[in-house]
View 1 (cartoon, rainbow, N blue to C red):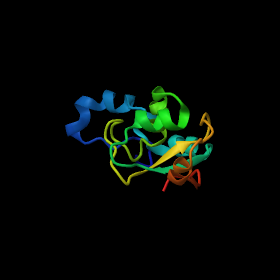
View 2 (view 1 turned 120 degrees about the horizontal axis):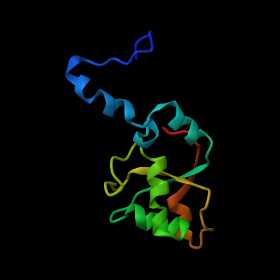
View 3 (view 1 turned 120 degrees about the vertical axis):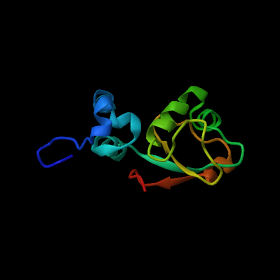
View 4 (view 1 turned 30 degrees about the vertical axis):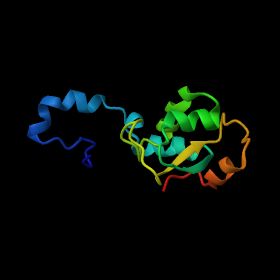
Length: 118
């Protein structure tokens, strides 16, 4: 963005200008609004294990596999796609809606973290 509040758009991108303007920074995991949304939530940090999936993590911590989208939404800045997570990757899990932990190994996997992304 230039000081004149005009987006930088080389000629090669003029044809897709409308599509670029229509992109929502929240769905891309970028921008001030996204960071502000993250700062208003509390998280725990979860280190992904071999053979984990977002749906399995959601089922374990929220009771429903469909809550995988909740995990993906707060990790858009580190995840490209919900199916592309890797062992040892650290993800933020929102505390809101989390079921009480029932076994000791879940407490080891979930360690307190600040609400700001690293």
